[in-house]
Amino acid sequence: MWSDEKVIEATKDFVCALDEVWRLQRGKDAESLHFQAMADKGHYGGGGGTRQGIYVLTADGTLLAASNHLSAAKALETLTTGLEAWKKTTPTQRTLPSDWTLPRKRWEDSLPPDAVILISYNADLGAGAQRERLNRDHVWFTVEEARGWLPAEPTEGRKHVVSKLITERIAQFHLVDNVRGQTLPFAAQDVAGTVLRTTVTAREGNVVSFTIEGETQGETDGSWLLGENDWKPKTKYPRGVTTTVNGVGRHDTATGRFLQLEFAAIGERTGRTNLNGRKEGDVGPEGIGWIFELAPDRASSRIAPAFVDIYGADWIVDPR
Amino acid sequence: MHASRTCLLPLLTLLGAVALGGGCGGDHAPTPAVDAEASAAIKARYEAARDQVLPSEAERRWEEIDWQPTYAGGLRASSDQQKPLLLWVMNGHPLGCT
Image (cartoon, rainbow over all chains, first blue to last red; front, side, top):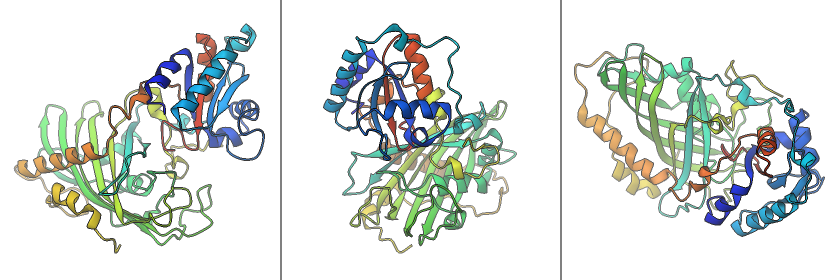
C-alpha cells in the first residue's frame, strides 16, 4: 500500500516513521510507555492484543487517527482523517521542548559505526509462486567478523572457505522461510552441511575482486536447540531450507571496507512454523530464493536483524 | 532431506551446477591462474537469480518515503518540522523483517 502513488503523495504532509511494535507494546522504557499511552486509545483499544497498524499523532503523543489495513484506500482514509484533526491541534501539542528526549534502549545501540550490514530480500520461486509477498531483513557483521569472507592474504587465484561464524550466522538466522511472516531460526547443529567458498579473481592495487559460491542446508525435526527465549515454540515444526549460493564481491584491503558484497541463495523450502503463514497445504517442497547485498549508508539500514537476540555475538548487548 | 526438486528443475537447469572445486578446512594453496570461465559462470548465475528475487522498482517505491526508523525519532522530527507524525508499526520492523 505504501508504494501506491496517491499514498506516497499524501505522506508528504507528514513526518513518516516506522518501528517494531513488539518491544513498543510490551516495553517498560520511556519510549515504549509513551507509545502505549498513545496506542491504547487507537483501533485496538487498551486490550492485551497487538498494536500493529497506522497511527497519526502530534509530537506530544495526542492520537489523531488510527487503523490497521493493507489497503491503500483505507490508509488514505486514515491519513485524511488525521490531517483534518491536526488542523485543530494546538502549538503545545505540536511542539516538544528543544531538550526533549525519550530515554530508550535498542538493539541498534550495539552496532559499531563501521559494521558491515547486508540487506536481504527473499521471495517464493517456482512455477506456482505468488510474488505478492516478499520479505527483507538485515545481516550484521563487525569489521573483524567480516574478515572471514576472504583469506588473510587475498592474492589472485586463492580459494578460501568462508569462516564458520559467517556461514552459521547466514544459514541459521537468515536462510529461513519468512517470506510470508516471521519464522523460527535453525540451530548450529541444523546447518552443519553448509559451506561457502570465495575465490579471489583479481587484485588491482588494494581492491580485491572475488566470487562467492557454496551450498547451504538447514534441516530440523522441530526439536528446539536454542535455549529459553522469546522464540521457543510450544510445538515441534519440522522444516528445511537447502540452497545453492552464487555471488560476487570487491574488498578494499587498505580501508577494510567492502565495496560490493552480493550473493543469491536459491533452493527449496519444506515444512512450516507457527507464524510464517504457510498453511498445511503449503509445506513444500517449493522454490525459494534470497538476495543479499550491502545495505545503503543510511540510518534505516541499521535496523536490527529479526534474530539479533539470539545471534550469540558477544558485542551485542541485550537492551531489555 | 527427501525433497522433490520438481519445482526447481527449470531454474536449476538454467543456473547450471556449481562447478568450482575446493573442499573444506581453511585456505587453499594459491592457484597460478584464475579460472575465468568458472568466475563468469558464478557471476551469471548470481545475476539470473538476482533478477528473479529482487523486488521491482514499482514494488520498492515505498522506500522513496523519508522514513524515520524509530518512534522517538519520529516524534522529534514531527516537532521540528511542525507536521503530524504518521507512524506505521508492525510485528518485526517494517524496514527489516516483518
